[in-house]
Length: 363
Ligand SMILES: [Mn+2]
Image (cartoon, rainbow, N blue to C red; front, side, top):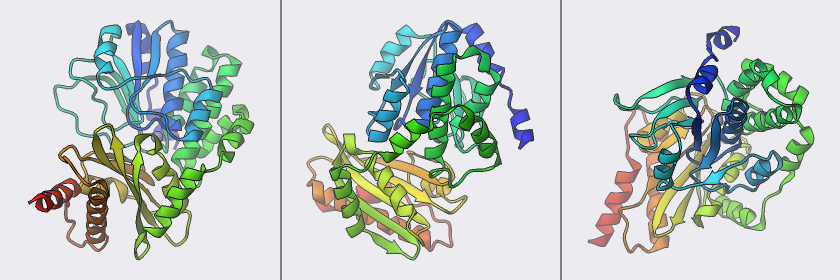
């Protein structure tokens, strides 16, 4: 473990604050506690060095726990959409991205820093990144930033250290199924975090119970589930984008039910005039998620035990929503069934399967 920590050269942080006057911190994908805590550290660190920055969210904060997390820790943020990136390009010399596989925002907007604990996606040769730090041995970005906080301890006020420690604790907590899947590095990091974190805030966040609507969705998932031995596939039906994170919450609950070893909870998400088929995955099996997601979908990401992918249904016009949902879900079950007893390592593109069935329906 010490070897891994020694291998990391943290000097890039000092180099960045020397070189740049302003940087945008962008959170791609669903803003989870790990990404928020890491971005918050960078914001505080940059501010200390008089580097102007702000945290920009491309997706809405939707989980109640995450909204409370941002509120109690005073994490500043602005919501932008992809069009807003053009404005950031005018305002900032470059940007920073944490906890996301794909660091690309726009070809002529400079990516100064990309930090992640997932295997990154392939980046075209002409896309340049000043510093790319990928540490797969870490269960969370919060693990990485806790080490950075230890190193730069004197640059933060005591209240900020407490906020950051609380943020990192919760980031690690949510990325490791409530600390049930931690490794030796995490354990060391936790010793430090427990000295400074606010356990009361963590308790408060964890006490937030399901809303009535989430209970409804959970019930729906229980009744629509398809079991393939120890794997479960289910759906919560058609939901609004604002409720998107509920599938992750429900997947968390399902994976705790023994003897389930892999669970996929899906939803058809209505987003303005288009649809996205969103799938959240939890597992207890190591070394399975990354290849599973890669084989069936292009857009997705996974750490060891958690993952998600989205299928953009932009090709759909004038669909009967319920029918579209059923096509997506049935094809997901079909693909997973084949993957489950796959001995040939087949690659099955879920989007193509859905598209094909949808087209044949129109004929
Ligand atoms: Mn993470």
